Image 1 (cartoon, rainbow, N blue to C red):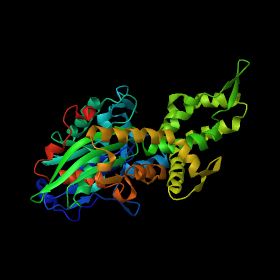
Image 2 (tube, rainbow, N blue to C red):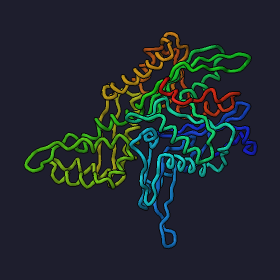
Image 3 (cartoon, helix red, strand yellow):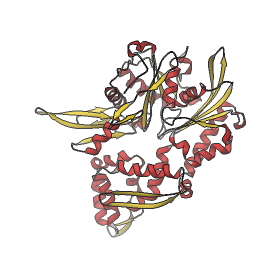
Image 4 (cartoon, one colour):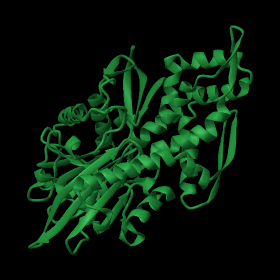
Length: 449
């Protein structure tokens, strides 16, 4: 992690922007002159500006006892794939932030609440950086989604957990800003005239929208938030549609088994674990793997279930989702792509047409469109009065999503920037404004819009 342009000795003059994402996390630092940089991480000869939102815990013997070790980011995935020691891999845990049903998880001998996972993750990020982040700096600005992911999400609970996690690091005073507002502020630096801007931020777990009115007076940028909305549907949901239609049927979904003289359908709930690839690894200890083995013995066609079992036993979920993600990216610029996944006993291949993919995600796109309309309605602004639409996030390149915005606003009003860094950059720059508090989410404002 390098900050080549900033004197860290003057950390009190710096502001820190943190975009903690479902799939990736970006941290940026800005100074009072408007310079902003993302922290970079050297891993495997690559310089990375994103830190994968993942943790891997494992036990190592020290003397006569065991000690739990932990890694984060790309190092967590590396440790997970090596699999030399008993381990527990956790990814996309942001999706549990607003869940009242998630209280804690047991990792070897210790219990971890959400705030423990988040603070542990951030400590690994800083440890790999080689640069001391001053969490006690005057301005730490943290992004949060407009709508947290999950069933019946509790925003108040999520924010309590965020504050507890960052409080463990010494950032009790941190401000929390909607993620699309951070992206909007980053984009607004380009504006040379008053504009009403819609920001669409597509992450791994949520799609968030903000309508902002930007104006300049005396060289000072002023922004008035007009309306926000969000939904827990985004890129990960699109990946799952590919798995559900292409992969799961080849792993026994829809198959039959015999029990007590009856022919029954293989329960679909096992395949719901593909919604998050890291959930597959948890099937080893949940009892699901044992049940699948029993089902394979009774299945009319056992081979597909045996392949499913191999994915779990050999921790192939990560490799599978890389293949799925590659197919989705390919469909963003090709009308058809070849999906191929080879590992152990598996050899899954299929042609996927963009038209089929779009039919699979049609309901997701419809819900995203409704959420977009909600933001416009809360702002009291029709689509015709939006001057610019700023798109950020990898899912914005999916043709069905792009088409939604072209149809509503026209190609000439659309613009985009780096799909990973713009939010963190904007958050850090907000920390350098005269009154960063005015950008922050207050109390229950998220639900009031």
